[in-house]
Length: 173
Ligand code: ADP
Ligand code: MG
Image (cartoon, rainbow, N blue to C red; front, side, top):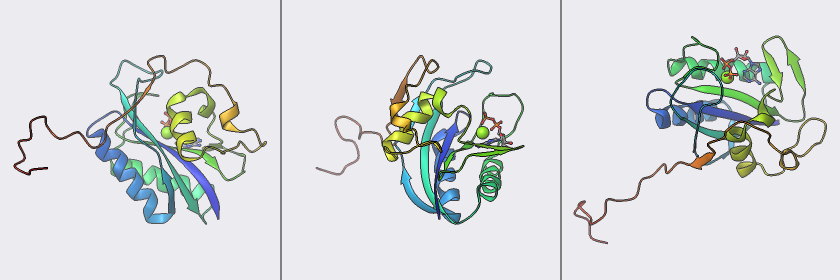
């Protein structure tokens, strides 16, 4: 069994529902070992586009990384993911960040994800659910300073909104 970290993101359509679909899809084939908070983040690179919701899911899987990537692409397609512009807006993006202690360099799959350490919107949720996560060479991700990018920061996204002020639901508390 390998412990893997998958970054999930959405900035098109019902962003929160897209992330939920990713968690459910990953959980259908692997054991869910952790799900981070959801963060709202400014887009990095690509054309002008709306803000993302991002999170990180930790799974335990018996499958090889390449098979996991295929499932991840299927989950993206099920949420109507289109690849139109590189780093453009997307309904759902799943990135394999870490796969056990493996370093993988295949034509369609590089692990650890090559831009992992440049992206606060990935590193912050990753460390929230897997503080001791390490790169294949043993370097602790927590010990690496994330440079540049995400100038607007990474904000917790309130998944469950507060009840309206002054009641209105008819339920007394
Ligand atoms: P990005 O996630 O960088 O915005 P895309 O999602 O459009 O870009 O590109 C995904 C492509 O990158 C996939 O077709 C996949 O084969 C390839 N890829 C390489 N390494 C990874 C990885 N670790 N996780 C996800 N996709 C990867
Ligand atoms: Mg991707």
